[in-house]
Length: 134
Image 1 (tube, rainbow, N blue to C red):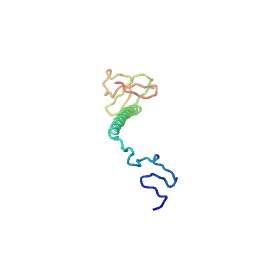
Image 2 (cartoon, rainbow, N blue to C red):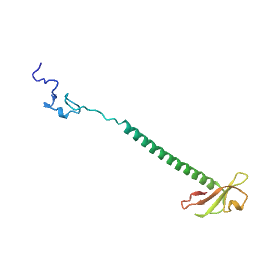
Image 3 (cartoon, rainbow, N blue to C red):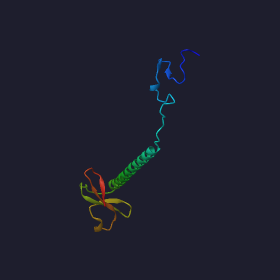
Image 4 (tube, rainbow, N blue to C red):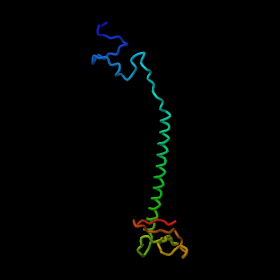
């Protein structure tokens, strides 16, 4: 046995030639405190549930906004494809009708004043977007 060799119970770093037991991230003797890991399962489960609820709420919000945007797009496409011989005024209400031959047209005549098949009433916003009147 070499005279430079330290006993197993002594923590000696041969590279730096120093005793570094206090620097180790683990217990180095029988009298050292027990190192235990904390149980984080409950915290993880709560966090996962919170994140899932937040993501689901955001998804439903985005889905509703998308559906509303697509409905608005469909109505605007339908109105811009319809026949009308006047320039619509921003903020005024107009009514969309469908003829028997399937052709659509925009009119200022209200549905209760005529016998055409009404597809809905709309008004033109300042952004030149048609919004349906409920």
